[in-house]
Each structure stands twice: as C-alpha cells, then as structure tokens.
Amino acid sequence: MSAPDVQADERPYWQTRPCPTWCSSGHARDESIADALHMSHDFFEIVATTEPPICDTYAGERYVEAQAFDVSLSQYELEREPRVWLGLNQTSTGLKLTLGEASALADALRKLVDAAEATS
Ligand SMILES: [Zn+2]
Image 1 (cartoon, rainbow, N blue to C red):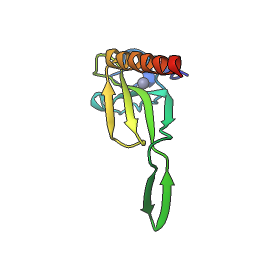
Image 2 (tube, rainbow, N blue to C red):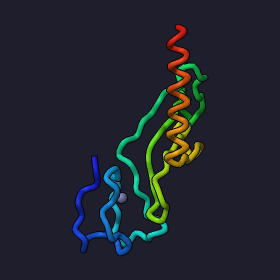
Image 3 (tube, helix red, strand yellow):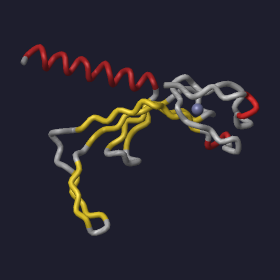
C-alpha cells in the first residue's frame, strides 16, 4: 500500500516530491521537516515462542505477553535512505539497520536456517 497521491498544494512545505511508495504516513501541512517521518504500512511481528513471556502488572491487572520482534521500514525526510527497524516487544528497544545491514542479517539468517533444515 502506498501513500495517497496528494496534490502539491496540499503537501507540507518541505515536500517537493511524493512520499516513497512504501510510506503510508499522512503528513500534516504544518509538520516540520525535522519531524517528517515516512513509515511503512508493512509491519511484521515475529513471536519468539521459546523465550519466556513478559509478566507484569498494569493498572492493577496482571498480564502475560509473548515476547516478539517487530520489523518495519522508516525514513526521516532528511535521511539518505530508509532504515529497517528491528524492535523488541513493540518498545523503543531495538536497532535501526541500514538497508545493507538488514540485507546482511537476512542473508545470515537464511544461511543458518538452511543449514539447520538440511541436517534435520
Ligand atoms: Zn511519507
């Protein structure tokens, strides 16, 4: 899904070209360029089934939640290229990876999974 095609006179002052095709953010006309963040519509959550769950209490209620990675794409308008966010449990804990780093990580994971599946 891509951002709707916004007419040039409806765009924020800083936006001289359409959003990246993967951006699903709406950008307010008064949004500053320093805060302008393109966000992907695609958001992947991978539950870590072998990790212990998070057990906590919120507003007097006890909850148990599986740990999970969250992966998405974002780019500030002033950044050169998008970053892949590899987060943990939908918190601010995680890593921003360049496209090259994300690609290297994907390759490494693929090789490890292939090796494990070949021997199982
Ligand atoms: Zn955008």
